[in-house]
Length: 303
Image (tube, rainbow, N blue to C red; front, side, top):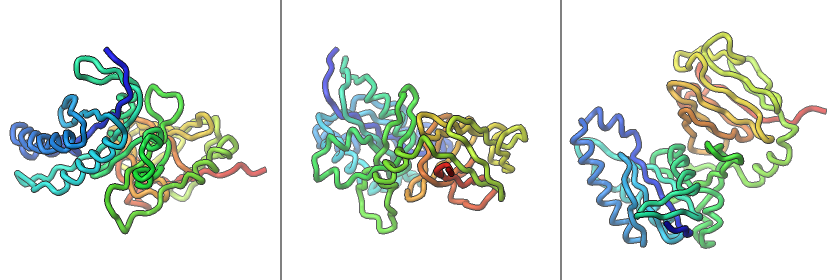
């Protein structure tokens, strides 16, 4: 057993359940294995190695953050460029993290690994996410391709983890992320801020120390009249100057922060809400104005 500084990368096949249902276990597994064989070559080319596979995910390690960054970009580019087989096109989402890990018998362990496993779940198809700590370990040129997104609450961590995205390809439709100055402004005023939720023409105010329940059941604080919402779907509460949303549903909770192009899907997980955005109970927020979507915003308390 040894402790050393390494970068850990998780690459996860998106929507694998649907693929297995459509193709059957044997054909779907063969398709995933073919993709992983190609991706393994890309990992090795950047000086890394595949530690193990976990079902439809690869766990890899690299000697430094720069190597993990370059490998992540290569993996996404390769997955997108791969020819579809069996009438199925595989997409992957990637998270990588840098810091002290424990290595034993070819495997990696520790907080860095655990956080990386949590973050890849929050990613979207074709997306690469990492932490602010990892971005700071990158060479200056590579840091320019990263943008800060928002803090997320990771199970087992007291303080939120600051999520960042790697902009690995040109996208003319990409909007600016919630800026660092905006995050700092929000943090400075968080303790005196209140959260306002708007739904169905009504506005609900959440105080910093309060908690509200969202869902279809009439006993909730905010009743969401949608078949997509669970009876008790989610809970929002104040914590450490932030507002945290916790999913407790069957269909998941979707959060889109204004200024971001990618929404976060929570399944029995929690995340810190940004300054303003949309919450979808049981379905994506792209259906703004529909019966499962709420608008939220943080506001300074009136004096």
